[in-house]
Amino acid sequence: MPGAAHLRAGQRRIGLVLVSVYAVLVLAILAYGLSIAGNLGNAAALVGDGMLVTIVVLAALAALAWFALLVTSYIALGPSRLNQQGQMITGIVVGVLCVAVMSPFALTANTVLTVRNTINGIFPSSADSDVPPAAKEGEDPWHGKERVNFLLIGGDAASNRTGVRTDSMTVASVDIKSGATVLFSLPRNLQHVRFPASSPLHDQFPNGYLAELGNGGLLNEVWQYANDHPEIMGGKNKGPRALMDAIGHTLGLKIDYYAMMNMYGFADLVDAIGGLKIRVEQDVKWGGHYGTAGTIKAGYRRLSGEEALWYGRSRVNSDDFSRMGRQRCVIGAFAQQATPAVILTNFTKIAGAAKRLARTNIPQHLVQPLVELAVKVKDAKITSLQFVPPQFWPGNPEWAKIRTATRKAIASSLRPAKQAQTAHVSASPTTTSSPAKTRTAQPTQTPTRNSQKGKGDDAKSLEELCGL
Image (cartoon, rainbow, N blue to C red; front, top):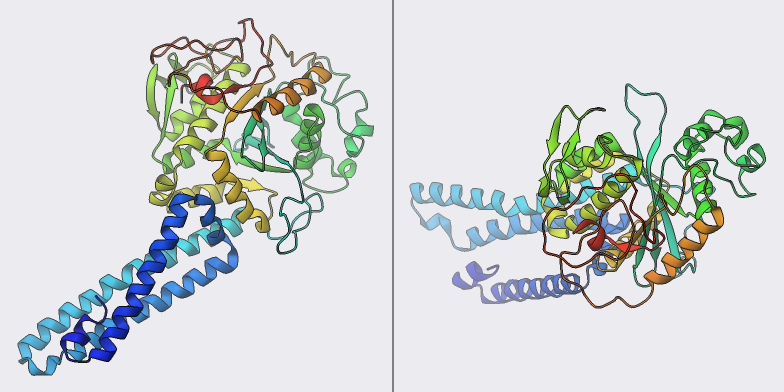
């Protein structure tokens, strides 16, 4: 207890001041901690760049103050009255204590610097021309929008592959007020997408992307095409804008931001949080085209990063639509299991993996509002809709039908949640067929080809689809 040594030494005034200051600081920290525990959104202020620098400075000052307190407390107790051996022993003990009490502050400063470096490494410091400018202080950072739409991309770029193919494309449409989110999964082989009139590719492909190719013009090629043709796009590295335009026009939504994760590095991120617990409905062979590396057995499994990656990518005995279903279950599991406690415990590994693998156009000034929104999303309803057969055919898409289903899913997500169902409700992650029936929790049929019949244009919760 700061001040106890001074009181023991008879320095009453100094001792009482130190005790009082310590009590006030402890109560203030406790009050703030309880406010964060009651509402994680209150922690969003801590990710601002100015606040991060302030925390580092305060941690350094606190470490020095605690060091000085120990030394002055030791001196106040009059160690000179001890014999030489006593002075040596107590001096060593106090030295060890000084190092011990400064260590937490050093750890805090190091962690906060890691946060700052990660934010600066992932989020661009200046917004590109397609992103709205930063709102003035006190104004709505989302510029009055009711929803914000994020394009979440899994890319397969690697040292042994040329270019980038966006093999996993999911739009997260988030209601800003409630956090209610709809995940729209688009197949990579969706053909001949259209572009809005504002896109340079609208005039280039008035009838759809590479419409003259019967089996070509796939959605996962748009990013690389735009990057390969800067003369058409009006600049370099316009792949993200082209893909956002195409998908936004397809869904009838304005895609505000994108975030891309290298799929091959996603395994590092999963490993950083200790793996993902997922319901595997049937054995999934993984590794290459024939599944020769191993088998992910059916049941509730904690998958390593490599296993989670292949669970979402394996084509053995399945197809692209099955992969889409498994991929959004991986996204849902990650969102559910990356709790604050898990993130804090493994923060350095998570930050390192994310910094190496992530790419986005979300500017740094939106990081704090984004954290506030993420807290809402974690506790809100998350539903999912994928545009797959038999309701939606990638080779012959009905654009009006896709937009109608999108509007319907968003409207449904804003309705009050239905009465809670039994915890383990199961439906194949690859189909959005008729509502799942309540049953006991056990592995059922694996996602296979999208042959089941039913109302595929109804959005389902990830609890229903994935048994989370």
